[in-house]
Amino acid sequence: MLTSDSRNDRPPAWNAGGWFGAQLGGTLWLAISAAVLAPRSAAVAGEVFAFFLAANLVGIVLWRRRSRMSIFPAMQILLAAIWSCGIAAIFFIDRAGLWETLTVGGGNNIPAPRAYAMLTVLVVALGLIFRVLARKHSAGSRH
Image (cartoon, rainbow, N blue to C red; front, side, top):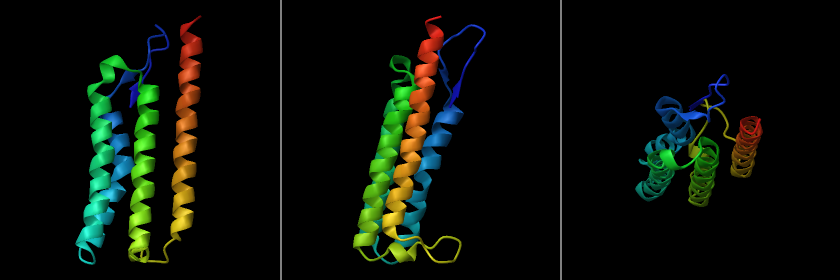
């Protein structure tokens, strides 16, 4: 996602492998969920796949604007898109009564409210990490 050259104190650089790896890593579960749900409800699967596309569209737009923005706020925006689309997907899947269809490891699934909480905690933690890194880099570049 980013590399930094501390010897020259240059700003972190965008990295295609890291960026798209993080983007797909954060959204691929939506596409897989859509595929799993398709036999039971094409409508819900379509909604979930639309959320996958929407979050990835945000990622692509951010990538195309990389020359005009720092990696840190871009990653926070991507995280917000992944969170929004993920929360919406969980809501639509649960509302359709299909949440239990998505079992993890063939066992019992976590309840939807816990999935909301887990996704939120994960995204907030990652967002805070990028905020700290942005401040650290900003402070280091002033010296």
